[in-house]
Image (cartoon, rainbow, N blue to C red; front, top):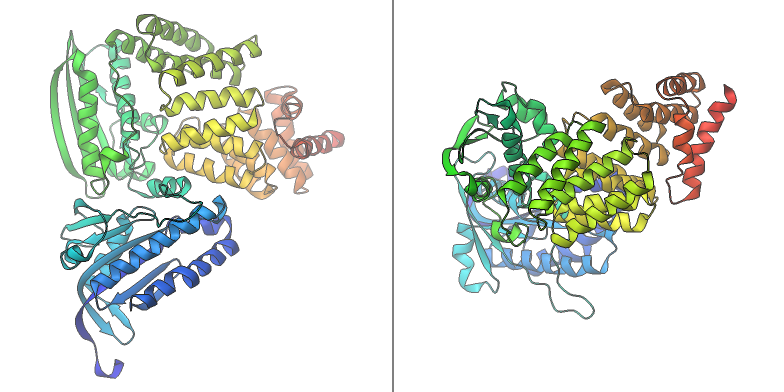
Length: 593
């Protein structure tokens, strides 16, 4: 063939890859390769042979397969995904793997054993927008197979995909698991689904500008921005950058392309708010930072009572633009919309503004506002979450004189919030904190996992899950969760706290060099936090760098006398060997002093 030159022909092309492959390899390279080889041998290759396909190439986690018949290509894809559902149901969590598959019928160039051309490119782009465990078809593929297809097909609309100028009409196939004894069909494995969400283009909502001419109305524009972030996150279809990172840009003139790069976002929503009496005017514009083009720009003049409907209207418009390939109505968090008293909302937003001062006086003022919000509307969930957060800050920052009373107050408000709305991710975060302080490790882990499952864009939930995973003896998984939190919240002003906890997790994983590097990075961001210094000291000690370790411990003692010993004596780990590891490292340094 090679001597005869290249030829063109029409063919059905199947492209497949593994969801989250890089993360799986980073965590367990040998195990991941073993699982992938097994799935290729037992599932992929037999399905291709059964349906008369030709495997053109295997590249890492990806595969490209040529078929003479598009019916055969799609039947092969369905067989692969059905078999994978059954295999994953029977496998432990750490042995599960999900494929994405795209199928297109188009013109290809054949050059020896290899193929190129538009047909190959389109199938690869369709694979990239498929869900974990899913199949994405082009219009051309569907047109040739519709009468032969025994499965539900959902129109995803026209998709703008990478490196192809024209939009591609795409469809997804609803895969039903085969009936097997002792198993049942489920949605894609949660970890794979969450990983897929984080792989999609992210949205960042920058603080809306207060145009009211009244500094006292700043809380209102900030509150609207935070609500938009929360409601967008509820769609569960794309990552949303955390509030703390977005608010770094408050009050600044921004270069959208630069901000998008710093936040790891493709889409930027920005706007302004003008509140006057019982009327509000909001402008909003969504920008695709990859092209710097305005995708939409709208101006809304509404009665203040309509503010909550307006939030939904704006977020629905954004979601339809950012993730049209998904069934958004199905992906959005299923929660009955409750009417909210505007006065209660106002008190709650004022309370959050005080809370974000992160000091003792701000906490007291915040709690007063939350109390008033609850008095106005006892069925409104958010003030209970806000008040729980204030108790959490009391404990964390040692604002409280009665730690046990603060833990019980945190329990009370978190449980009340969950009783009102079990589908609120932050309510479960707060209950997780209460369990964590109470050393109820298993309950804390359950609540952290619920929080992440409800809202995969909740950076706080990923961070807390990583923290708890470390405390129960799985620091490797903890590292992965905290790294996800940092991905979702890359510009948090309190990043030094996240990094000091990540350094502690590396220390517990006995990855001492990584612990040193991460603790040092935390100190470079903010040098007055003693936790990073004690983790740095102990990690250096385990590396045999005793002189540097002594210097780090001295800085810790200078910042807070006795802190290192108090921290080691907390004995936070469930496994006493992990507690001893911390204490032994500290005692070694103390004995040298």
